Image (cartoon, rainbow, N blue to C red; front, side, top):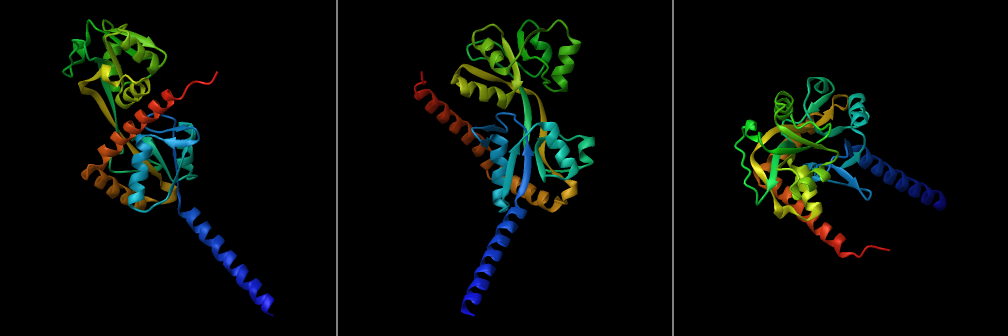
Length: 269
């Protein structure tokens, strides 16, 4: 009889433990994103990035566990539409996507496009793109830099453009003075410069060319509008308390330290 009681007690403990783990798993939000450094990317099996850090910080404030996966963007959008996952970031707001996604009211990250020049150059910019006449502007092939610049480049054939394959090659062209100005997503440019260890040689020209807001969006099929509202409140608090800027600064500081450590380790022959 005692053995039966012990067995029943043990079975009950196992059942309750498994139930608890299942509940935790069920409460974890499944979030998807894309490979888009420095906003979000996967490196050495870890999901990193400025937007990743901001998303985690906001959900931590509302004590909401999350799991973030990096995958192809089209696949991620389809999963949100079908309700296979809970949320997606960093997403631009479009009428088509709003049919199946509840967007945050708070902007998660502004996708800002800026012009960059060498600090010792005499290049200036006041927001008027026509002032680019006479300069050689570097850009990456098949990349959109926002409606304002794309329209300007298409309609003004006299502006001199140097088109190249990657952002890294484009930045190198600026550093060796093969181009006068580089146009880039601003955080993308800072990420490349930090990896090169040459952030002190280049300056961002002000004002930004264009700023397009991007958001986190929740699958309507998951009925997460209440969670979205909590996230909005948490993100607004992070911005108001100065934590938003601190998280971004911390990301670059950690990236700088990581790059320094990598350079300090001798290459294996």
